[in-house]
Amino acid sequence: MNELFPKNIMEHFKRPRNIGEIKNPDGVGKVGNFVCGDIIWLYVKIKKGKNDKEPKITDVKFQTLGCTVAIAVSSIVTTLAKGKTISEVLKINKDSILKMSGNVPKNKIHCSFLADDALHEAIYDYLQKNKMIIPQELQERHERIERELENTEEKHEEYVNLEKKVFGK
Image (tube, rainbow, N blue to C red; front, side, top):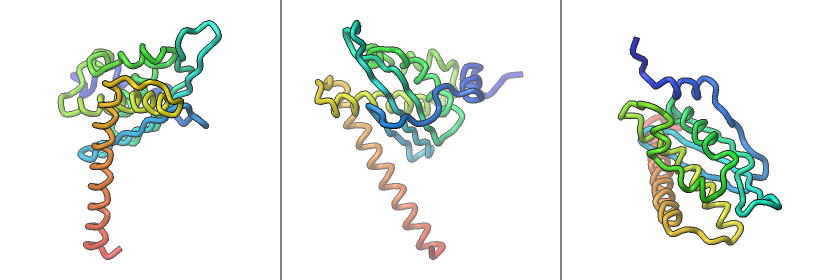
């Protein structure tokens, strides 16, 4: 029987890793997609050990309100990021995520990219909070994500207002 989703997606959906919230995180990434309705919060704890040249992600967790692929890929991304340095994490990209995810249906590929954006937003948040240098590519990505999130919030507000108008609530 041909399954709708690849084996790795189903494994991470049924048994997600690193699910939850980190209290007092060092960085938080929040992303959303108005079209599909998926929203992801990704939290990181980052520490630099005495023998480390660069800080590492010591803990990473996510909360995803979304479809099978969004939840599974959030789990996959957190497993890819845990224990990695910031420069290693910044190398995680859409290609590496799709490779780990398997043959995701084309209409669900955009869900794979949300977790990647959430991870990069959490790193951006950490660097900004600590007044560290933000690579140009990460800055540009943050600005794109910020615009998309604003658009999502505007569309949500429009929907809520329409609902009030139609249903009188």
